[in-house]
Image (tube, rainbow, N blue to C red; front, side, top):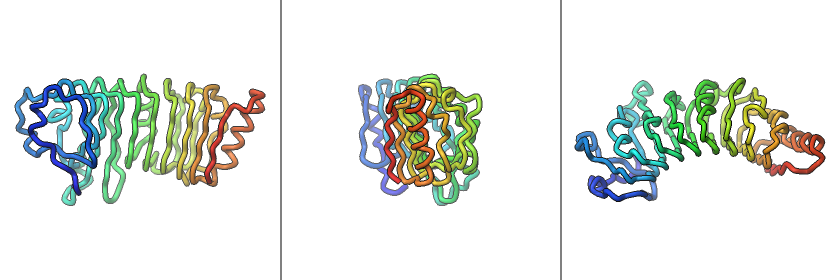
Length: 258
């Protein structure tokens, strides 16, 4: 797994440990599977850049149950040379009942794997990278009651086709960032699906042909920011013009970098 460091078994003796900071990824010692059942870090809150081999089963039982108070987690699932797509094992992250921030990534040679498990209801910030997502999985994310920030990066939605958000509401989402996301059509009544959205950021989404005009109906929307998507220029500024005509104010900030 490249230059990932191995976390020392001494970690488990640090009963008061709250935050772990690392440069680059880290792996647990392979012998973690034989740890004493009572080995836990009850006070740990932050655990960044944690890497797992794709074939490791029951991660949530072996590892995550040992961090009951974890609030901030970064997980990367990596495919080993001898691991086939059929051996992909994602952890069940919904066992982390106090998790507020999560970045989940998967690095595979030939395809983007699909994450089908649920997420903790406590999540406020979620970043997903290098994954395949269906409308159903995105609907489950939309039902997270506390989610305020969502970033999708190098993600494929519905095989690069339509993101259909019918009857899906991100009730508390304030920031949506789409970075190198592959989908071509966005079926959404934005006012209903994103009732409190403040920021929409889109970068390098070359298959998407337009931003739906209904984003102009979101009263809370303050900013649309677009990079490297020349095809979105017309729809972006049409939304700005629509908001100005409807409200009589130049209230929507647009940053466009084609």
